[in-house]
Image 1 (cartoon, rainbow, N blue to C red):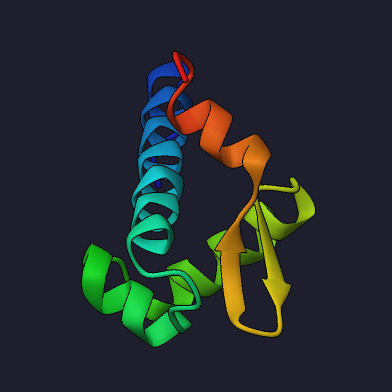
Image 2: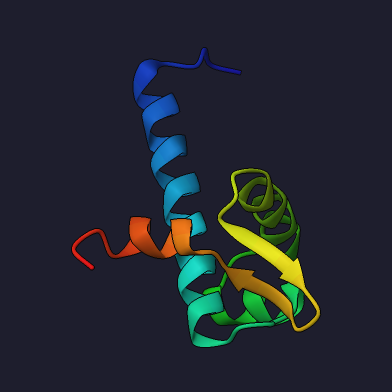
Length: 83
């Protein structure tokens, strides 16, 4: 196994951020979508979607309500900073 470099860390962070953006955009298009539906819509594995949803909840970017997962105002501002 090769050692982790700063470039590896940056590339992984970029992929993680892109996955988060894909999931948030998919939720904006289909509020209340299930993790399975989000995985299908984004092309991200269901396991990764589950992990990212947990992180997005902790960060206050998505919340689980009676109608399922929804994007918070905080996340909308980050996705559309000019709005």
